[in-house]
Length: 269
Image 1 (cartoon, helix red, strand yellow):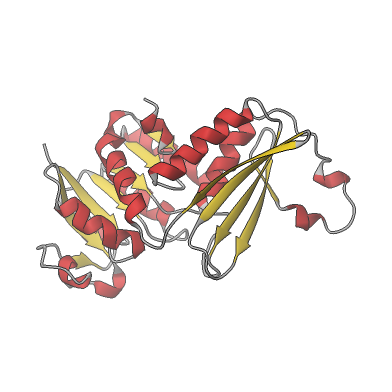
Image 2 (cartoon, rainbow, N blue to C red):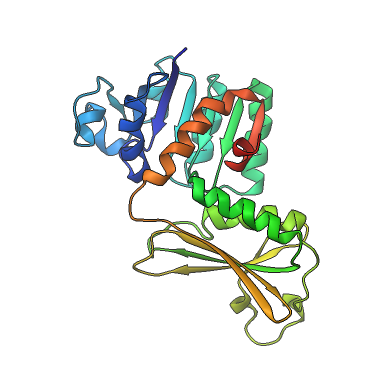
């Protein structure tokens, strides 16, 4: 059975890598694409490849005229929630690669997915190696009480922290032991230099650097008496690392109803 996909952000950085990957599979098919700047063009030609017979739409409502099974969204934090809710209302499952969604946004999407009996998978990073960073850090948090996260990205990244860092901090906050560091509200000086607290139970401090020469990097730094452990993931300059994980999510998104967060939920069963 072929899974029919609508891809929003189809001519973007990740979209350009996903299009040929989907085209070369036997069980997936692109039936719609959204990219406002390329609206009306053939998708293949819009990304500098051969014609694919898929016309780019200016908006998701237009693309939803074609029967489809899964929405894959790689767009912008300002529009992703609207896209996903719109797709769910039309009976599609959704795979979200766009970062910037907060806990309230995810809660609303989960509620809508359950109401429609559809699945949603959202990940701050669909890279397999970035997912291993998360799994290794969760193991370390069982033994080490103190952890902080440093998030690196280029100056133009529109959200902070990155989806990778936010997701990592939130899952670590749920399992970590009490920190030995002084609480931020007990400190003097400029408290903002301690970063932002992310997570509900035992928040993790996250420090976001936005500088030229970085693509995306994230590191979890664990400290213990007289020793330290750093677990770090560095992304290269292409979007290739995100393709395999995204396609895995597309194939598995319909297995359960409701929202699942993180590619690790698929890699661990």
